[in-house]
Image (tube, rainbow, N blue to C red; front, side, top):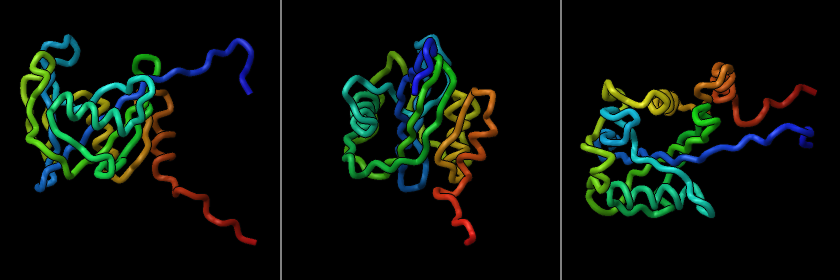
Length: 169
C-alpha cells in the first residue's frame, strides 16, 4: 500500500557485460572524452531502453560498443547491485563466455582502449562501484548495495541462503 505524499522510488537500469575469454580474463574499455571518470576502466555497459529486457539490452550494448554478437542463451546472470548514485540505479551484471566476432572499439569518442584483465589482477583505475561488484562476484555474492548507508545489510542479504532453513517441529 502506498503512503500518501510519498513518491515511489524510481531507478535507472544498467547492464554490464563480463565478456570472458578462454583464460578467464574479462574485457574492459578505458573511458575517454566523456567528462566522467575518463582514464578509468569499465566493463562494456549501458542503460536499459524503454520496452527492453535486461538480456536484450546486454545483447544490443555488446553489438553497439564492441561489435560482438551474443545469443541470449549464452548470457549468465552473476550479480545485481542497487547503487545509490543518480537517485538510485540497479546494475545487472552478466557473464558471457561464447560470442561471435572480434571485440572492437566501436565508440572511440567514449573509449580509447579495450584490454583483457584477470579478475585477480584488475587495473588500478576503475569506476569504484564496478570494482566493488567484481569483488562481490568473485566471492560468489549475487546481490549487493553500493552507496547506501546500510551497505552491511547488502552483505548479509547476499550471503543468506536462498530459502529459509526449515523450522524444527
